[in-house]
Length: 335
Image 1 (cartoon, rainbow, N blue to C red):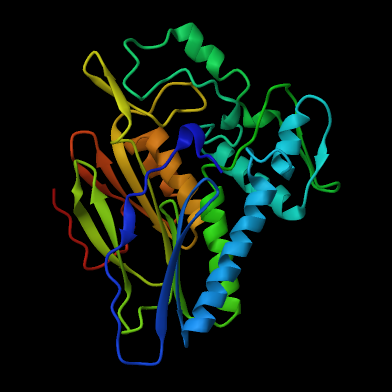
Image 2: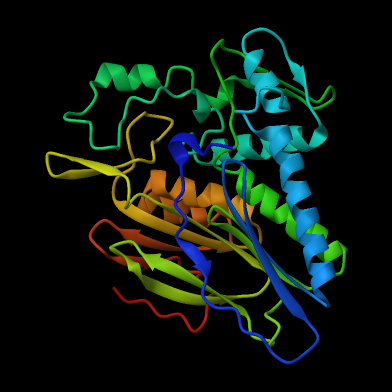
């Protein structure tokens, strides 16, 4: 699944895996799914069980990808997009409810997050080829087909209808987090007591390492990617990071992020990295993207509506900002 204009960078990772002499084993596998990298770590009683459950995780992510990937022409989301302005499309309840939640986030952020961003014209270039800003007219035109208010849901029929021809919905900013959460729930139901599912930086964790220590997650320093800004211990939690420090343009001394505000068509400014911690990766994912778009002040106000989630923001001028409910203990930051 392409993350499109709301792309997130992989800026969190497992610091170290320790082993002890007990019977548990840890197995890890890296694979490409949903158009990105997935790192799957499972702790089980034996190697065969761990490998079997990694296979189950991959199968589940593949199932979800085939349902919601807007770049797979035979997915249900692609069928919805192909019938924009034509007719409602019946979808599985799972797809319907994911769309419902995405629209709710779109409403809460007043379009700072918008599940229909997939229809945005790609007029901003972050490959070094831009020599001047797009015109105000071109920017306005680029978001003409974006607008969550034009998505019509029918809960009884389980249908999705996009009112305007050319509209599209896409789960590039939620899909990986949703998949990691589903896999964590599945593993817990199978009695797998510890692991990490990391989908392109959207990470769901549970349990502990074989030596009884919590998982340790590193957050990259956005101003020196070879160093860590912080190391945090996690057990059953999720963490996602949205960042713009590798893709941006500067015009008239102002830095413009590759993360575009779907309500305006203009790039986000002010923040270069946002990491969100909370119970599930889907919500954390949507929030980290939204906070990048909304900026420090509005972003922190939004987060107050989600008391189970906390954030770490890094501004363009290297200031570290933590939300009031930041719960991580033994936390150290340094540039």
